[in-house]
Image 1 (cartoon, rainbow, N blue to C red):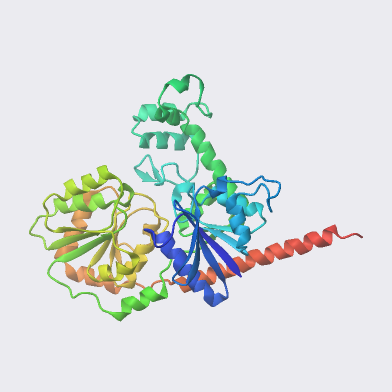
Image 2 (image 1 turned 135 degrees about the vertical axis):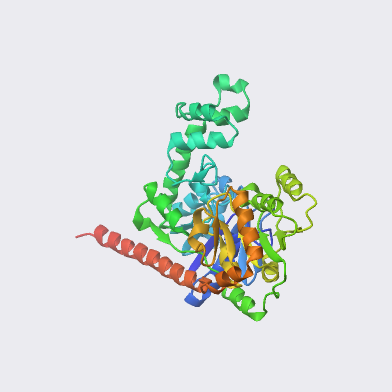
Amino acid sequence: MRVAHCVGFYFPDGVGGTEVYVQDLKAALLRHDVDGYIVAATNKPFEQYAWEGAHVIRYPANWARMRDYAATATRAGLSKFQELILQNPPDIFHLHSWTSGAGLAHLTQVAQLGIPCVVTMHVPSALCLRGTMLLRGREACDGRIDDKRCAECWAGSRDLPPMLAYAVSRLPRRSWNGGWTARISSKAVTLLSARSRAVIQAQELQQMAAHCERIVAPSQWVYSALLANGVAPGRLSISRQAISQSLLEEAARAPRKESSKELTIGFVGRLEPYKGAHILLQAMARIPRDVPIRLRVAGSGTEVPYLRLLEQAAGDDKRIEFLGAISHDQLPDFLRQVDVLAVPSNYMETGPLVVLEAFAFGIPVMGADLGGVTERIRDGVDGWLLPFDDSAAWAAAMQAAALDRSHLARLAANILPSRTMADVASEMAVLYREIIDDRQSADTTDGVMQAPP
């Protein structure tokens, strides 16, 4: 069996949990006689290369919009992306992103070729205009797309006062481009069209469900949100994230650092508001300087105002260390140097993978009480679940951990064995074969029905 795994970007570019998942899944599937390749968007010219034994094809992100209508063309009217897929025909097309470079357009075009498709929802962007799944930025959302509620929530995220956000959500469902709106800013036009954007969001989610054989939810909350939007249960599967066998072996290969008097808390991830690093820095400012605690922050970001906010929050606190971005290969060494991993996400994660990676090293995790984080941490058993927007609560938990190392040891002793990518590969191999068998059965049935009497 041959599977094309499609992502928005890939190694050796800077990557996140989705790309690590795809790399590990591709490798683990080989034990089930499932081969394939990685097809990923790029802002560079087309290229092909091998990465960790996998064939990687990088296509320009605009290829889904480029078509050849020449009469002499082999497949006139197909997009360049469709041509690429037909030149490398898979049995299954598995989409792992939901971006302009690898998203609905690409899923639709592959489905048009008659190739069965699977989507794994690694991010909540298909469900949420804000991209965070936080209703009005204050609480977890159930994920049901309602044009008025979503428009009001999204408009509020654009710094519109609550009364104006409410008014925008009650405007007619239409695009406000053209006419008198041509005389106002594009930002204002976008806000006026908020309700229409929510309607389009719902339509695109339904198109996703229509064009793929199965949507894979990495967490229960994603599964429930898809059900709430009318996606048929028969089109849904749950397959939770997992770590690679190689990481487990690396965790067992060398011990972590010996405990010191100072508790070391680690953060690893993008330095963007939705990952919540600012909560940790604000918490550190609340902890007295004589408490034996350190914070190591690994990651980089692109939002200059946010990076400045982090710098200001850290101030001259020598207990805080910024390490810059680290590669996934450097993650084991980073984890060996920390006593607690902090995951203060300010959005509803579908994973995150880093929680499982920390557990593999025997490290308790402090996580935000949102989304997939709550499904992976057992509060008070192998970690802490803390309010995502309350730095005082984080400060209290961090200080208590620094002053009571015996509690930390009990949490570490309660960590259960990690789910591995071998488990995910087994689930995906079964799913792929079910899809192909169903297709073959349908084709056989159609053939019998169409045969002459």
